[in-house]
Length: 309
Image 1 (spheres, rainbow, N blue to C red):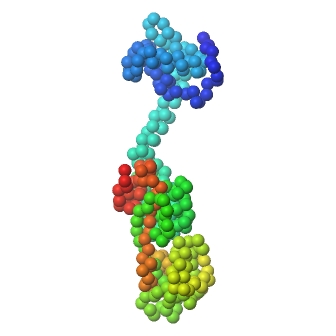
Image 2: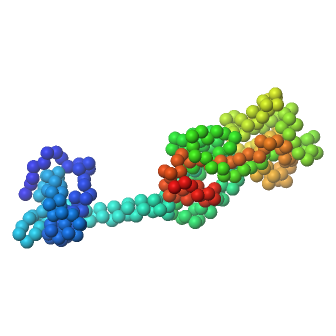
């Protein structure tokens, strides 16, 4: 038997509680027993099922003295509900896994000093300990990293402490040492250490023009009343090392991007005797209280610190 309906049934009319109560009524064969099982008043379950019938425009239950039974339409609806129960249950398990941190997807944006250092290994160890969590790592400049985290296109950012993170939640992560690198046989190679002023007369090879490193060097040169003689710019530490190794100029790089390549390329690396040469590396997130559990776990793995609850 059909029923009049005020409008066609649509997804916005779907009420999972009413569907669950309908299924309970059919399974129990009685509104009273279904109400007892679901801990709800019999009048409430009857009203919800009647509203469900009105919304779909069909009678779903046959009501008789012995209880209730599904109509033909009700049997079709019940079969579809059985088809949905598996995916819905898996969805609940997935959400619980994300909430508990055993599953999830984390976007990490990091500057070159971080990706050239310990970060990839630390992420690899985290994935090994949490195989249900996917981590995507992309390299950007520090300014781009901060923008990505602020706008939500990254969950975690690693950037240079020489850049202002603004309103983001910032945690000190690691530090690195900046060193001067020189071409083979350079006149300054006989020195045990160097200052920025020692190399300002030399052609300089820098990172891309908006990088935190190049901005730092330009600023420190300005403090000295000087400017860098910028001969070349590169988008990777490897390219900087190559340009220096063939004699195009000198450069300043993180120690981890210089010392391991000295013998291979014949370049010379010397400590930079400047207070700013010891550079903090920072981690940032938008709001630690709003992080999903997997992201929180990775932050704590990287920093060794518990985040505020």
